[in-house]
Image (cartoon, rainbow, N blue to C red; front, side):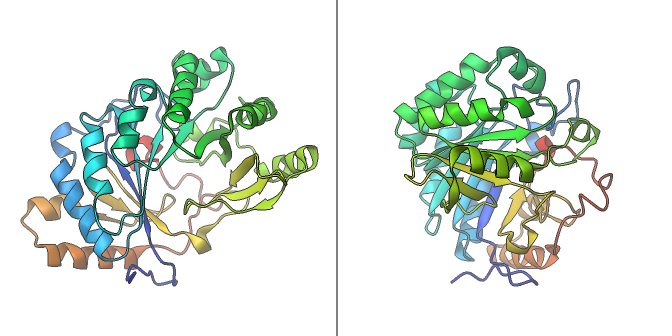
Length: 324
């Protein structure tokens, strides 16, 4: 029975867990070039601490777990952690959000470790576009990683494209690429977290959605995954595109997720400051019962909605610090 229900009647069954705040890219909407404010590794939750906390969440009804970063595949022995959390009773879905630069040589091991789904960031199909947006010339590595994920048997693979002024003219090209490869495309409005993200140039996805629907004959559809995307697809089911629109059409009323940073801070909303420190609790000797009560108290702190539109300057933390 799920007892993780917040004050607004939302069932919280989805946790996004950052396993590192380090990354081999410097995506402008996530972490600016030259940023030095990384957490010390001694502050990172250990695998034992992560497993303990996820077990307690699962006992309360958590079903879906996504490993994020930074870049989660950079965390040493990440496949061992995947194996451990995939075996926790109640966890029905274990997914990873990755930039895919390490995926070509890790996809099969991740599959065998119990990872069920992959979400891969791809913001451009032009080498120079990837280098400008993501800060490194890694398009070949990303595409090789996507192919390796497909060859390893991951279905579906979701390709995440953050829509911004820099790449808005590439949306149709990435639609065609995902159609050809059999990937699900998800278009994401850039969230104004930090000045760098705000400078990327917001693109309203509502007109894009209408244009793609007309051009490709797309119809409303549903895709499992527990996230906030609203999906369109071809009538034959061969292609699906999702729209994650926190600004133009927010989904706060159905939000079912919380985020845990690599240093054990539980964030209840990307656009608000409510949080709970579980690292200090665990390292201070808290019992399972005390941690369980802290989880319940934290869920009660979850706000009704973000304020990105009303107060775009409210948050100064970067996505890499929060966990994607």
